[in-house]
Length: 408
Image (cartoon, rainbow, N blue to C red; front, side):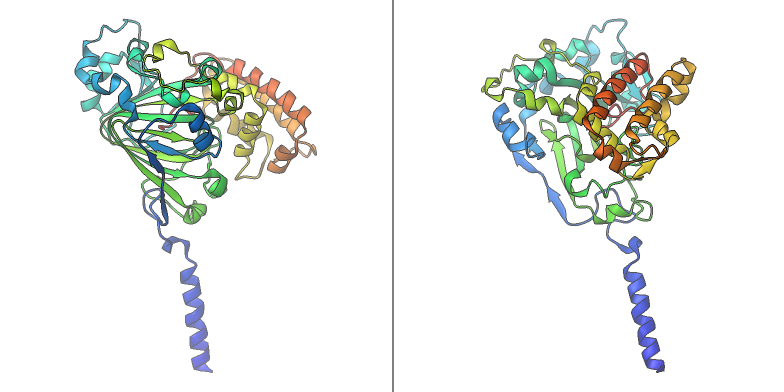
């Protein structure tokens, strides 16, 4: 009997230890540090737009395109000496972050571009800003995007990421398709397929579409789903570009003196593109000075985009009351909205959104209600989101808005 009890105890102890989530591979390690590791497809050219759409956009498939950024004069021209020699407009400033490890609670600061270039190597500051217009002529629009319909209606924004290296982004998603091209240094990307593992990566700050997980030391007790995720890894060298599909989860690190530019375009506008009417042969003269980026406001015109946004907000809590919903929408912008007298207007619109989506009127909004909401709810919701966008427009500080700080 004693032997039997001892055996049972050993088996029970063995089971308990084997089920200890902190013993699983990747706990306490950097984000993405667990097997099996998958690698992103690599190709040696920019595909033509139609091929790019069929092979990568439609199937939501990331791809690394090697050496393709060298088509832009920026690849050879963009040295610090070149930037310092520029005659920058006296009123032009760029936004910079003061920490290389992303902290969404910190406000950005502004300074002249040339002043940034003179100081970034010794101060640790990090430029996160649209490409200054006076160097836009050095950048060719990536060949897969050289379509009149994309240029006229689909381009959302571009961001220039410029640092002395050592930057680390949060784990995040973006509500756009994007191509990131590297002109200096090295970058590493860890990427997760949201169609397979979106319910395992806790985006616990839905107001900014990011997770607060420690990217240097993942804690499975706080984020248990990450112990089950399959990660894609890829490294970029200067001259490479990476396509990251809509809503794919990713985290980025940069090394050495580092300069990249990403282009965001509206995922849902892809459906309206006549891919047979695009440039079959890439035009090296189609630079940033000849195109316009239309901003994020227009995205709220698309009902599917709004549906995705609210489903993301409710993915992990599954349900929330009006106060939590308000916080999930506004995040850290609340103090500024109060200071500028816009908070009550924004709150009123958001609570109206909550009310129309709360189908059973129990003052709790569930993800099932969002999924089941009829078309008329989303039609009204779109008008409210557009109204909310008008309220939020202005000199809002870039501290917590989705897509604004996330390095791609």
